[in-house]
Length: 412
Image (cartoon, rainbow, N blue to C red; front, side):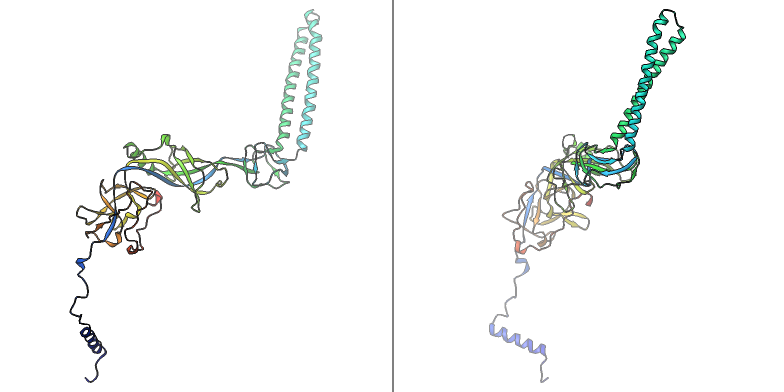
């Protein structure tokens, strides 16, 4: 017992300090109940007209896409265009060896000349026999045979003209021209290759200004929109002519807005979706055929919707919920059913009533049933979604915020 343990020495030192300071008989802290309730920012929700957007995965395609194939069989002699360049309708793309087709034209011309000579001879025979037949100096048979020979000769001339026309067409088809204006792809056949009429693919041409964006709308989505529109809860644009904005793979937005111009009534049995199509201006050719993009449809509106800022919606054990302030200024959790997105807000399908006060800032400092103090300068009303509410005490706000899902209907 001559030596004191370390803990004993520490206790004696604490007693000595308390004695010197004379303050150890005072409480170390105030009771927890004397702390003021945490301060929160709220919005008072009211029905209002809320624009709504719909977002779908789509793929671009040229408004006109043409496969260029030869119309005659022959040897591909040369290319007449630069691959990937823009061409105009009628521009020469390829040339097929013309020699055999020129020979066919010459042969058809000779056959036409021969047929015309035979017709002239038959006409002279008829002219010679007609007076004799009228004078009863020749038989009816001789005259009828001469008339028939003239008619056959005239038909042979028409056949020869048709053959010559066909030969000249084939000669013209050796110049493979662009059927439309657009952007060419690479040449698929080398010079010197034997190409087959109507079969061999030479290249393709895509007309990309404007350009199509094709996407699918699920059957459940169609039914939901039709139900809400029928009940008057959703107002769609006239003739379903939605404005369409295109978002690219890197997140950038195409600088021109298009229009929805087609919606198929049929449902694809493999995908369960119906096809829809938008036409989008593409003057700078930023969009290329085959790209995967996101089509954002705008123009619909919920005329009497209740919406809250996205950060006010929390993920609970049984689904989405918000924290409200009741009449006694107590925090009260409220399960909600969420609908579509609208800018910075999330439309609430059910769970809230007009006038409910929803906490948007300071949520992490409170617990259900705890008293709260509503900030004197509340956050911006949900009726003005473009303005973000400022937190009452930024320094005390935890860094963590409830995560918001991507703005995609499929993600919900």
